[in-house]
Image: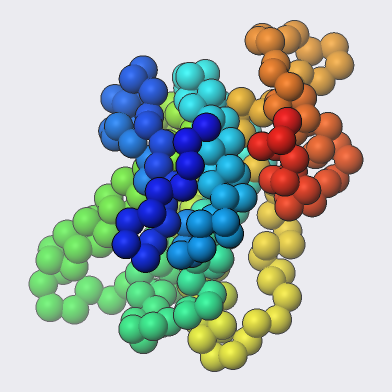
Length: 238
């Protein structure tokens, strides 16, 4: 396994995308900041990301998957958690989050958001269409980063679910910016996302593939309700 890469004061995770997946992902390399300048502190996160991307590559090789309503809610939840976790330390650095919330309310079809087309309505409609197209592309990129390929007919459902979670994340971060870091009720009700490559057939179901030791460990770990920190610590060792 490769090691964390230092560039100046930053340390990065870098991993080559396998040749057969480069066209799907649209890139030849994964590069992520490990958000530390301490090489020893970076190693556990590097190992976690290395295992995670191996898992995602396996998932992508499964091709198009059909998502259940629970899958869609779980994936949208992953988007929510990523957005909140990335920004909660400094939730509104430029003071623009509150101004963006109405646009997210529009995409989430929030009943509390009403669109008033002042001036030239056609210009307003073009801007809203551009914003919606941007969200759709954002979701498409997010799915690939999760190792998921879905059929076109399911994309509208996923975009709608993610849009609702983006609005919830904006509201959470606005509350954070006002000093409210109380328990996150949204996070508590989200189902766990289980990537396709991790799924093992239940008793009586046909087994479509052979499973490696990491997949079996992950299944056992979920059943025993191990903390994510426990899984992340043992995965590189296994």
